[in-house]
Length: 433
Image 1 (cartoon, rainbow, N blue to C red):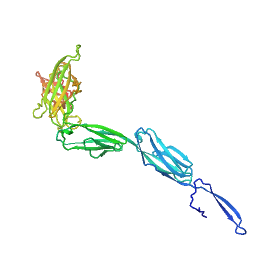
Image 2 (cartoon, rainbow, N blue to C red):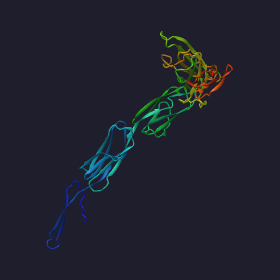
Image 3 (cartoon, rainbow, N blue to C red):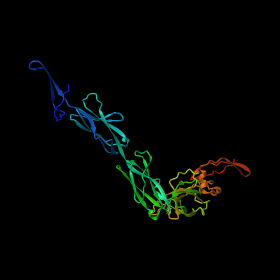
Image 4 (cartoon, rainbow, N blue to C red):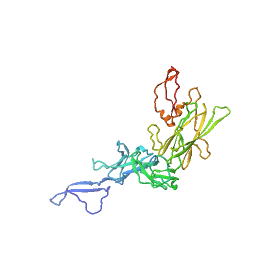
């Protein structure tokens, strides 16, 4: 038997509805011979509404996950970790709707891409699986800007192409004041959000490009600002040779700079002083040495230049960027057991750059080196001094074998042992056998 409700008025969920079922006799007056009272209860199917697929939050801030659901009777909501099923929060409601918030305090980057499951169920119908919905946590990553070099060494009329590398989540936008930046290209999946390359091209460098440009990458987590400078001047020379030499009278100078324009000349300033003097600094000798770096006029027995594009395979020196120029010099006739202050000033056709620290006060570089005390055998050999400076630098990568040399009608065995002295192998004098 089906019982149908008459009328259009909906029944309330908590209405006390009773239906009486009566069995009436067919004979006589039709008296009720059996009566049963049936109580009708209304239920509502479970549904989860308005739960976002993702929740984005900045690192170290709080994330609030919200689950809004309907259902009756005895609506029960819970939040669980999708990874391990751990129950994180739950609540029961005597109403046909409920809202359960899960607050994740001090979110870390390790929680990025973790998922949380909201479960909703009621006590009726029994045995029905809960309704579920997921929310993925995405942790913002502030932008970072990186370049191979923040200084572009260029020439007037040259074409410059380089890439700006940007990380961040969501993928940041990049704007450079005065430079045209092309759309990003993802080159790496890490860190979260990936690493994107933004190409920049200047077809022909003009005087107006010789300035500093401001680039800003931004997303919902913040922004990063970097300066990019275009210059035709050489970079400040960086002295690579060490602060000591095993020779009493010689030092192999090694330095580098960056310049797209060919280098023209360099000046070395050497100041000798005795730091052990009780009367303070005693200047013994100041020298200013000028060298041409033009391949047509350069004295290759005094200076060696490794320009961009030259073969570097014989030298295990990692490159520090485009247009790197490596230079070596012989520095002889030095005083033994003496400290030396060394500074380098290099020029191309546009400008010069010095290794001094403070360009305003023009204080000399604090780079110093010390010659060894003369022991009767540690002066530079003429045959080594006759080699191009870069050839001496290559010797440090080589192992010399024992040689036999005639001395005074007898044979003396000369064993050459390598000692690394700013790119030079010091030869030990032969001892008579």
